[in-house]
Each structure stands twice: as structure tokens, then as C-alpha cells.
Image 1 (spheres, rainbow, N blue to C red):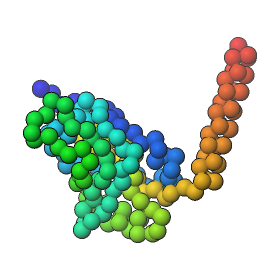
Image 2 (tube, helix red, strand yellow):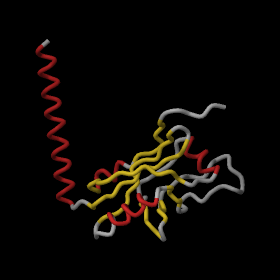
Image 3 (cartoon, rainbow, N blue to C red):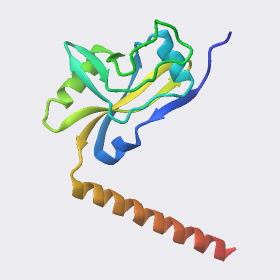
Length: 158
């Protein structure tokens, strides 16, 4: 059977873009069990409370919910177990230095399949304050209004 080509997004963390200022992004492979891969291929995962940590020179993905595979047997995986991420040593050191400052964390942005391999995109995030969130919402609303006005003018010009 030929290997899949391209990218298939399984889950996105929309809450992370709202709660954090996103800095450097990194793509990492994941060490998964067979039932986890099958559950991901079925499009089932949640990144809502997920984060990553650097422990002993390894990067671990924590609190990411990949539900048990419904057709799995007694070898089914635990839904919220910690999962090892596959990164080069230089990338791990760079991420470790980036999160050494207070207020920074590693946030998973999306889980996807790239050419048949499960990948996760993590980013260095700095937590937003409440007024930062209001500014982001106001800027998004303003951009939406401008786009709406431009589309109205384009339609009237025809």
C-alpha cells in the first residue's frame, strides 16, 4: 500500500492563539502506539489543555487528549499519557533556553499527518494578559470591518 502524501490536519489549538503570544514554531515527530495512530487517523484529538516540557534533554507532550481507539482491545493506550517528541539536540537546547525566561511555555498548536507520519507543531508562547486579549479581539474586529467595506466597494464598482 503506498504511503500517504501531503498534510492532513487532525487537531488545531485555537485557544492557544487566543491565550498566548506565539513565538518560534517547531515541527516535531511523536512517539505513539498503534492505537493512538489509529485514533488520530480517525480525526480524534484535543489540544485544549496541552503543553510540552523539557525533562532531562527530552521534550515531552503532556495533557494532550487522544481518546482510546474504539475497536482496540486490552492493549489500548491511556488517553492523557505523556508522549515523547522527536527533535534534534540543537532544537531541544534552543527551546530550553527560550522557555528559561519566566512566563514562557511550549504550547502545541496542531497535530497533523505529514507524508504518513504523525507530527505536532509546538511553539514558544508567552501568556497574554486580559487587556492583551481585548486588543487582539479589537484588532481582529477592525480588520474584519475593513475587509467588509472593501468587498462592498468592489461589488459596487462592477
